[in-house]
Length: 350
Image (cartoon, rainbow, N blue to C red; front, top):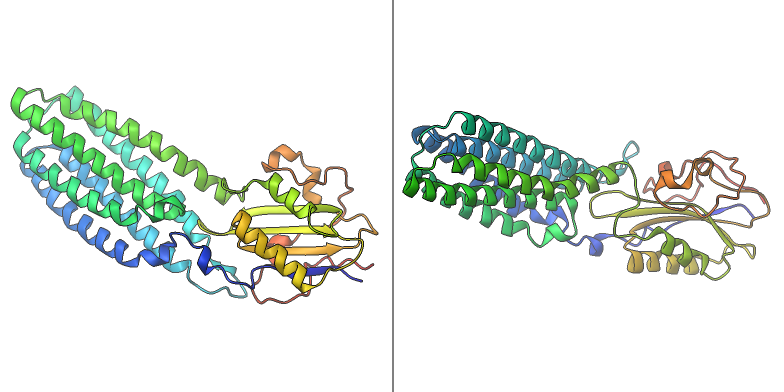
């Protein structure tokens, strides 16, 4: 009996998209419109009030608009159906958007920090009242926009990137408001850049986790919400399974996880119903939406060539260090969503 390949994605994913960015189209449209208008207003009044802080904040808000457009575009692309060329569809665009959003936010923080340092060295008189009023509007605009994405930010890194961007702007506007009021009553103009520097440090600390997680996703690491050891234990515990190897778990998008694994089952293929049950359990217990499981009798040495590298390099155990790795691995290329069962390009005859 030759190896069987069971694709666990035939059961659908939609009910697993907690905070699917595709459901946030209206939120994106409202947030982009509000922020685009505010950028024009803030820059204009910043110029009139001779406030470099306001103009710098306007530049940061412009990065918000670009970031929101990027996240929205990724959400739309993520809905594209799989094709012969892009066998996963364009789901991974959401991971790219999250990564770029984090990088964009870091770049904006760098620009604001530079402007603040210049203002510390060469202080400029600021019209505190104008600055405070515009900053108050900024808090409202960014606060309302951020609330639109609050729910989705918990489960979707792409949405979290947009949410963090907006919350960062609200925090900056709050700092500008407070410093504007103090400057207005005390005349201490150096407070404005000092507050900006403090807020930038806080934003960088908050953005670091977004950057780190999105980089891990792009490097096909096991998602933070999945324990690979528990997944392996679960698969080893299935009826008839004596060994698990070629176990790979990675993110297809900011909301979906995929898995491939070879199950050694000496008694033979257990039937579609048993495999369907395994795929269902993977979805429900581990939030793994797309699983491809290959069964083998174990009469020959089947193992993954990637395990020749040190286990630590993969960030998770594959559970097959003792095997002789003698075949090429094409698991990632087999999820073509055409639901064929032709194998992975390395059929095992028994």
